[in-house]
Image 1 (cartoon, rainbow, N blue to C red):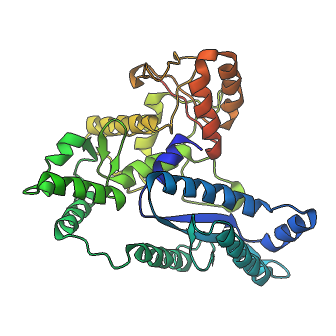
Image 2 (image 1 turned 30 degrees about the vertical axis):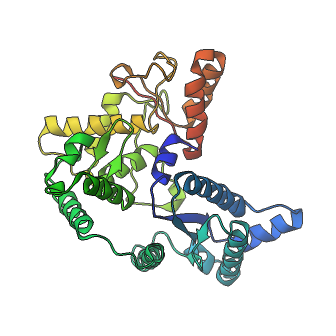
Image 3 (image 1 turned 90 degrees about the vertical axis):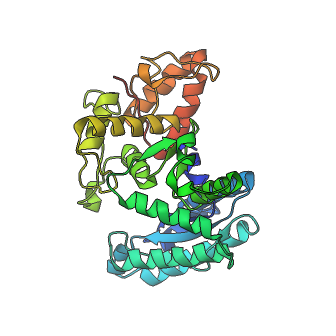
Length: 356
């Protein structure tokens, strides 16, 4: 599992949306049963549920999982329609997973079958069920007033386009939301803000104050090229060097992130210098959690005792570049660390290598 995935999945009190392809699920399960094996959807769900169970156990966390079948529109429009048969199999798959992971992962009572391109009904349905699942984890717990006040402050901060996007841990503790709080209250408030997703704490002791900004950058950086058959009009993809697919310079990656104006989560500063600083910071943070990687052919691969610095990086990205990089890593005993990162990143079918 990619380090970046582990980082985001390590959140506490989380509702996970587990997506499998819903249309054709009836046929897929029938063929798998005839062959005496588990179908692809079940294998995918097992892999994610096993990982979620491990993370929750390791960090003493709790979570809920909602199984979602996609492509309802295709199942309904098929001739003859496969909607009812596919829905029945989706419900059966959910039941099998509940039994298999009983005691380790809590699945939502019923799966959802949605059209992912339906931004009105399907989106509302998903968010409604997410709200129900989230509420079930609270069990009527009462939150201290000072924590609610800190949450309200963070919501106002996130809504202010001119407010800072990140800070250090020490600077964060001195911000006005913690005014008049005792040290133990500050620690409790920070833990609550982290659990509720208002902040993201990074290994370097930096704190992201606008998680949507950070998550948007990670999502776009990791996104593969859109599938022409899906006919998506609002997808965004980072285009890399045509001569070396998957490779992009650090400065170029920063520039391309700044060029994305359709995603309001970014809210780049109107000052070009500040916007450039913000882009460089977010790429640095992505590198810190393993979303972007170093090219082992252009940069010295060091041991964990000698941490690599962004100031000397050169690039790496995407499936086309992956095979060559893995071969290079295998040939160099000093590249074992990078090889592990590259093998992990295959979960996304994308890896970045960059430089300036």
